[in-house]
Length: 205
Image 1: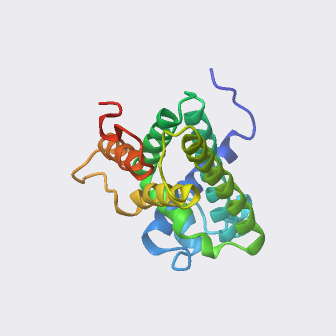
Image 2: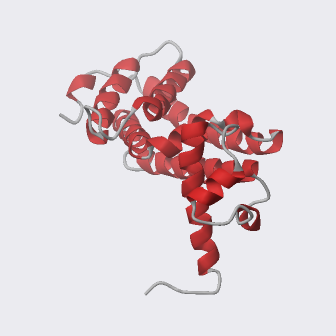
């Protein structure tokens, strides 16, 4: 049975505000969204947002921080599933891409609205993004060292792999031609080809 405390209503309100903010930022953009838009969509009074967040910018920061930290935890877990760089990169890319397809609306917001953050908040998100980059770079570096990857610039390749995955959030639609799993598997094959992994197209056939 879930633990019910006096803070439970506040947590529910924060969740409603977060979901409303994601939809509003995705539809109107950060600067085109008002606090009234968010609170009204959440079924709350215009002043309710300030009970939980000092500003609209702080709400965006919370969304970005939670989202990026979750992705960092996910890619670290993906790499931990194997000691083989080929399998590690393939699993990481599948998980990363599938996630960006499944939560494409929120992913668009936390990746493409970052310019609206304050310098301090942006620095925190950039630090987490750097950690995500490092996970991918390390896998590719180890694959090159082991002779199973062949790419002239592992760091640029890591950036390209992540950029492709992030961009899925921009174009993916639930009613579209491909499912999140189909996109994830295809991008796995693309990533393995990008690093020059032998038998990339046959991986996980």
